Length: 196
Image 1: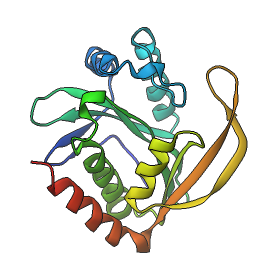
Image 2 (image 1 turned 135 degrees about the vertical axis):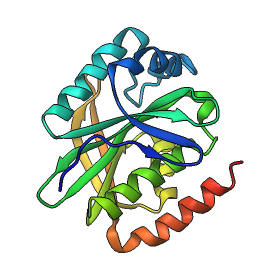
Image 3 (image 1 turned 60 degrees about the vertical axis):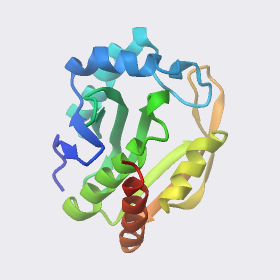
């Protein structure tokens, strides 16, 4: 499997290969809802955005991540970031994660369409037999959103990692298998169609 930067375009959003030129727009997106203040997730504060972009691009250079900036097609405004991460080139398998969206973009259909674009590329172009999602046990909003995609919960990794403040977190692991993708795709297409 060759995973290289690619632009994924839909009706509502375009996922662009992340670059340092996205910095200012992503700072504004994070300020929309002061997202870095959410304790159960890791969203960069404005002053940390450049370091986060550099971190993701460094992981891309090592082949373990492919990061994207999310842009609304209607306004051209950047509203967040998402990634392919923990890439296993041999299987091939990957995780969709490190995703966040500006507060004003939530409920707009941008997130379901982003997932549709990422999952379609993973299953139909890259040939992944499974795609994984992970989230904090206490992030109920994220867990519900992943379940709405049609992903199944695989299990919980207890004391799996430390949060930015050093607290041990339990990580919930979900996945979608290739034979489940057609039903998941139909569900996501229906959800996206409801938005303008």
